[in-house]
Image (cartoon, rainbow, N blue to C red; front, side, top):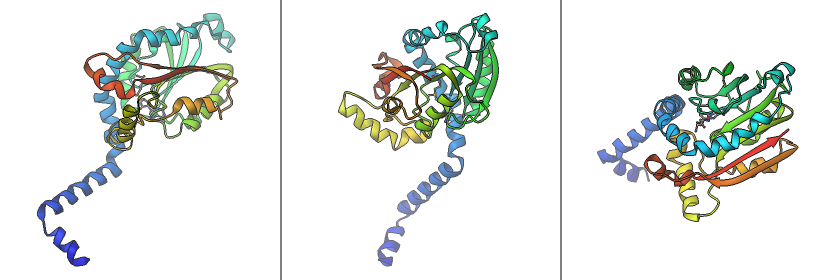
Length: 262
Ligand SMILES: C[S@@+](CC[C@H](N)C(=O)[O-])C[C@H]1O[C@@H](n2cnc3c(N)ncnc32)[C@H](O)[C@@H]1O
């Protein structure tokens, strides 16, 4: 057995390949998170921009009803604003959908988005920025119970460590009657071959590069309602498939959007 091993290792290309794999694994273990976050914030941002443009009208329609919601805070209510918390805002594409005079807190795990986020905020002065918290949606301990009118997440549940944990936290911080607006890509619901590729990518390169699970059943986890929302209204849909970057996006065209009420 030992002889066979020595024989295999006597080939320099095998030794070099093993060495390269070892180095890659070490980089992944000790610097993977850092590299992934920088990559995501600096490069993937362009893809997010295209996605945002493609989905703009649909997303606007989905978030529109927020304007009719009344804040639980009498002062904000007078001004027509809302206390909003967005999880995983990235560079801040959702600013424009929020009603004027709203107060916004965000909980974002990737600190490399902060600079882009505040640059974008300059164009949206109708929103008062309260706090940019670098942290996990699954653990928002700096946000008090029953303190937020609206929670928003768009394309975030695919990346959180625990969807159940995030939902529990969202439910905790919402005021009674408060609403959670979500828009998430999910596991393919029609075509088996797409689901197959989603599985392949999710357990390999996609998770490694983007920290994202393409095959996540966020819709089913939300519907299971372990967090205890009083009402969940959700629809499955597909994002429009257009050219450019979207040619590859058939693998995350299956989506769910919905509003969960505390
Ligand atoms: C695909 S991006 C979407 C960005 C933005 N919501 C949008 O729709 O353009 C996913 C975002 O979620 C953030 N994120 C991932 N896991 C998170 C967690 N556990 N808590 C908070 N944010 C998280 C990522 O850093 C990233 O900004």
